[in-house]
Image (tube, rainbow, N blue to C red; front, side, top):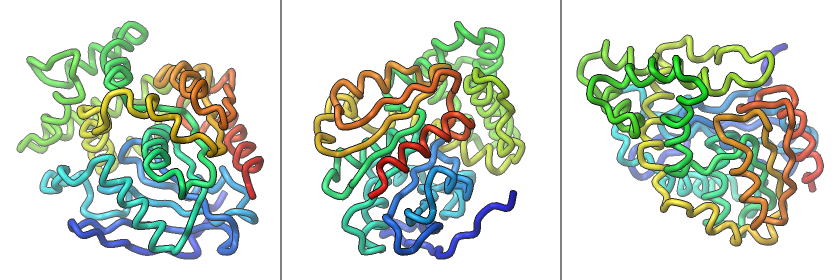
Length: 314
């Protein structure tokens, strides 16, 4: 199947030297909807249009700082990550909304994009007409520890390889920081090996759904480096948010309609994350897809997310 082609695209400059790549699909007169990709570091993909009825929606995608076709790319060790935080990304989203002269838009977050979507919607609820989250995460310190340490109880052999890839002396309770340091190492072979080991672990912990296949983009060394460098940067800082903020401030979403779509077999982000959020954000429907794992690209999770955007279309 041929990937759709954007009908509009551009680069949005920021005051601190970034150029953010954005692109649009669907109906230019449809209701605007922003897609926030996962990772961090994955970049957007035309296939994300499958989450929408493109006759009814104007789908706007943004490659977050350092990823995709935004520049400078995080795979280069010369790229400064100090201006790449959740707060910077929230500012970028607002700059993109202003650039397009939009008052409100729907926001769809995927995996890490759920964390970013929640943070954005809580900061600017007046600009979010609906919030849809698939494969829900909050990127708390506890979630990061689960993903990088405690999950070794489920995948012990693979976790030992993952721990080994962090280098001698790495704190097994803080592997994100250890990997972040190795991904900034002056020796390119050390960086190459660290990115490969990190992405191998990523493929392990998202593999619980039937029919899982390895992420094809991880075969690309450049993508691996971008992805690994950004995800370890964000995870080692627990998304640069006060711990528990997104759950604690969920009351700010009162009146914002939405949906949370989550796989029962999602071991990367267990379903209690979405469930606890639903207890406060009562304007959102919680849909648990029994056979789905992590990753909104799985067929059943994608179908449930598409059903949510159809239901929430104006």
